Amino acid sequence: MNIDSAAGPSTEKKKPVVIIAIGMAGAGKSTFVQQLTTHLHAKSPPEPPYLLNLDPAVVNTPYEANIDIRDTVDYHEVMKQYNLGPNGGILTALNLFTTKLDQVLEIVEKRADNVKYVVLDTPGQIEIFTWSASGAIITDAIASSLPTVVAYVVDTPRSTAPATFMSNMLYACSILYKTKLPFIVVFNKTDVEPHGFALEWMQDFEAFQAALATHHGTTDSDGEPTYMNSLMNSMSLVLDEFYKHLKAVGVSSVTGAGMDEFFAAVEASREEYEKEYLPELARARAQREATLQKKKDESMNRMMKDLAVDRERNPRAAALDLWDPNEEEDEDDGGEMDIIDRNEDPWPGQYIDLTQARHKDDDPTVWPRPA
Ligand SMILES: Nc1nc2c(ncn2[C@@H]2O[C@H](COP(=O)(O)OP(=O)(O)OP(=O)(O)O)[C@@H](O)[C@H]2O)c(=O)[nH]1
Image (cartoon, rainbow, N blue to C red; front, side, top):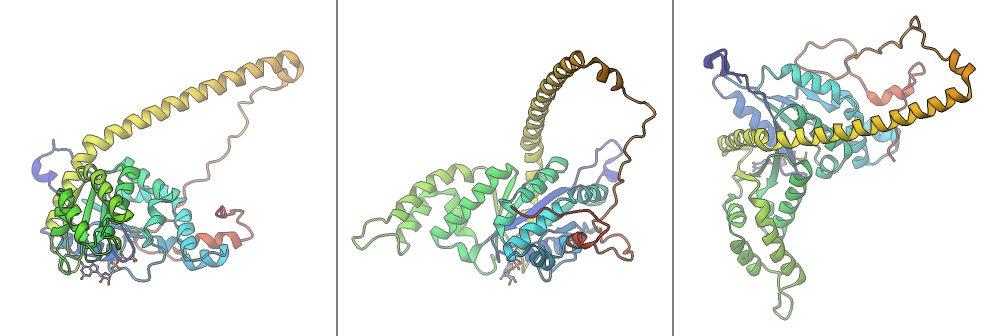
C-alpha cells in the first residue's frame, strides 16, 4: 500500500487485493470493472488497479486491460482450428491461456509493490470460469499468492422475482463453496432498481417467504402452493445460513454509487482472507505435501527393492550401470515470456497466437484437443 512510507519503515507493506469479478452474462461485470477503475483513478493520490481481462470473446472492454487474454489467444482461430462453437471456443481459449499462467503470475507479482488492487474480469458465460478446470486453476493459483476476493455481480432489476433471486443466490452459494474465498455479492444497477428488497430477503427469510406467497405463479389452480413454491420455501431456510458468510453491497456501475461501500467490504475481506483462508490453505498444502511425501517414500522403497532383486539376478549388467559424472545434464529450456504486459513498451512481433503454433513445421508443440 502507498501508506507505508508515511507509516515508517517498520510497517510491512500490504499485498494488493485481487478482486475476481464473476457474474451472469449481462450482469454488468465489465461496466463494474470500468467503474472500479474510474473510482480508484479519482482518488488522491490515484490508485490505478492492475487489470486482467480473461474474456477472450469480448469485442470491446470499457477499460484498458494491463494483461488481456485476447493478446495471447485468438478466440476465432481457436474455434476454427478445433472446430468448436462459441462456448467451446471460449473454454479452449481459457485452457490455452492457463498454460501460460506462471508467466501471468510472475508479471502480477512484479507489479504487486506498486498497486493496491488487481482486478480480473471473467468470461460472460459464468460457468466457463466457475466450473472449468482452468477457472479453478487460475483462482487457486492467484489466491495462494495474494489476498483474493470474489465479487459476484448481480443484475438487481432482473432479480426482483423471488425465484430468480433464489436461483442467483444458489449459484453464488455454489461458487462460495467451490472457491472458499471471501465473497461479496454486488447488487449492480441500483440506479434502475434499489437493492433494499434483496438485503431484506437476505436478512429475514420470513420477508422472502411472504414475497414468495404473494408472487403470481406460486399457487396452483386450487390455491395450493406449487412444488416450486414449497421447494423455494425450504431453500430459503437453507440459504439463511449461507447469507451469514457473505457481504452484500449495492452499486451502480453507471453512476458510481456504492463504490466506497464496496471497497470497505474488500478491506474486510482481506482480513477474512488472512484469518480464515490462509490458515486453511496452509493446512491443505501441508496435508497434500505429507500425502505426496508418503507416496514418494513408498514408491522409492518399492523401486529400491526391485533394483536390489535385479542386481542380484544380473550382477554383470549392474556393474555396467554406473553414473557418469562427466555426462552432460539436460539443458533448461529457459523461460521465454509470451504474455504481454501492456505496461511495458511494445516490441515487434509481440502478438503471440498460441493456436498458430501448431502450423509451424519447426515447432513440435501440439496443443491438446479438448476431450
Ligand atoms: N443502468 C445500468 N446499466 C448498467 C449498469 N452496469 C451495467 N449496465 C449495462 O448492462 C449491460 C451489460 O453490461 P456489461 O458490463 O457488458 O455486462 P457483462 O456482465 O460484462 O456482460 P458479458 O460481456 O456478457 O459478460 C450494458 O448495457 C451496460 O451498460 C448499471 O449499474 N446501471
